[in-house]
Length: 213
Image 1: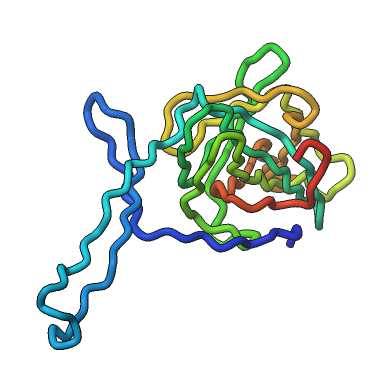
Image 2: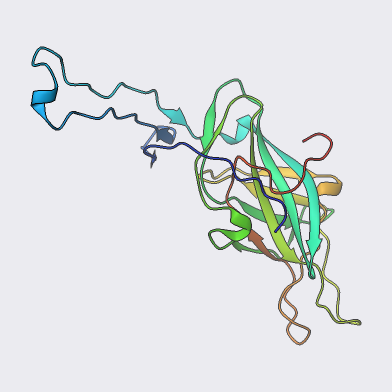
């Protein structure tokens, strides 16, 4: 484990809809209980009804900025922490798994085999993350950092990472030291570089706080 803090998430009903010509929205409904025994409620009292709640939009790519945190190593693997920061003025939401593409120094793609991490990996499961202005949706990249054998071929290191937030088609680029990862995969006889497991977004950090977190 990497010291994940699990915070409670209160969520009633989640519906993500894609309508022609409309932005996807996440609807959160609040339902009040209705008495089951009419004798317990005065007949003059109206039955409680659900109060309307404004739709909460999925964060657009233009409203998000990628961020790189720490990397923790254990047993020949690494977990690198990242986040999407809401740099807009409106509250929005994200749900699900981002995707990642490694890029070389000239911006060209490097072989990347990203896949969703199994539910519950590092105690992270898919859940709605509501981002107020300045809020962050954290996620992690988990990958082997070597073959475990000396003299084995080496895998390339990324110069940039291109993230696609969940539910969106537009991607965001991250550069700098935090974007430099070297994922291995396969085995010595069949080396497969670039194997990455991606966690879903979460409101809780995956690794201990660092400067700028």
